[in-house]
Amino acid sequence: MLAETTRRHVTVALAGDGSDELFGGYEPFKILAKARAYKKLMPKPVHTALRVLWARVPVSERYLSLDFKVGRALRGLSYPEKLWNPVWLAALSPEEICAAFDEPIALEELYSEAIEEWDRRPELDAVDRTLEFFTNIYLPDDILVKSDRAGMLNALEIRSPFLARDLVDFVSRLPHSVKVRNGNVKWILKQAIKGRLPDDIVNRRKKGLGIPVSRWLRDLGPPAWAPIAGLNESAFEGWSREHLTGSADHRGALWCRLVLDELYRADRNFSQVAEPVPGKAH
Image 1 (cartoon, rainbow, N blue to C red):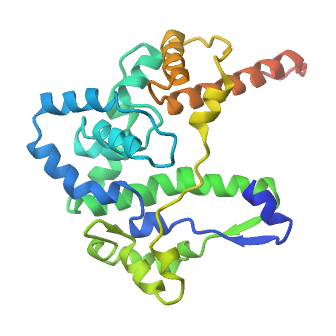
Image 2 (cartoon, rainbow, N blue to C red):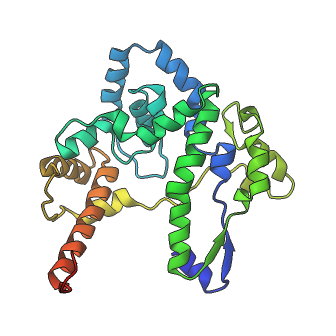
C-alpha cells in the first residue's frame, strides 16, 4: 500500500533498508549483554518457571509491547546462544514448530544457516555476530525481498542509500561499541544526524511497518481451514481457540497457517482448471 501510494507521485523512491542491520537497530541488540549474564546466572528450573508465569501475563496488541518483547526474550534464552537470533525472530517457537508437524525436528537442521553464520566468525563478539546474522541472512532474505516485491508490483524503483557499497564497507569496519552503546542502538548514526533532523525524530520510539495481525485474526473468528496432509490440525485449532479468547497471542502460527491455506486453495483450484499439455510432464 505504501509503494502503491508513492508510485502515484514518483517513479523512484528511497528506502531506509539496511540501517538497522548495519548499525544494530533491532531490539536484540539492546539486551545481548544482559542476556548473556542472565543465561550464565539463572538456574534452568527458575527460567522455565518464569516462562510459564510470563505466558499468563495479559496479551497486548500494541507494536513491540512489553509482554511480546519479554516473552520473545525468554523464548530465545531457553536455547544455546547460537540459536538466539533465529528463535527470537521466528514466527513459531521450536516447540510450536514440532507441534505443528507433530514430530520432532532437529534444531541444527532447522536453523542450519543461522548456526553456520554464527560459527563462521568465532573471534567476533556476540554483538558483531548478531550484526553479521542480520546483515547476511535477515536483510537479503526478508527485508529486501519485501521492498523489492512491493516496488516491482507497483512499477516503483526502490533504492537503498544505506546499502551503497562504500558506506557498507566503512560501517563494517567500525567497532560495535559506536553502533550499540549502553543500550542505545544506532548510536553513531544518531550522532551524525543530530542538528540535521529534529530531536523528536532522532530520539523517537522505534516504529516499524507492523500490521495488526493479532486483532485481524480475532476479527475473522474461528477459521475454516482445509486440512493439509502433514500438519497437526489439532495444534492449530487449540492455538486458534486461545487466540480468540485473548488468553494467548498465537499470531505467528495462525498467520502462517492462514497464508498456507490460501496458497493451498489457490494451487488446488489451479490444478483443477489447468489442462495438461500433451507430451509434457506435470
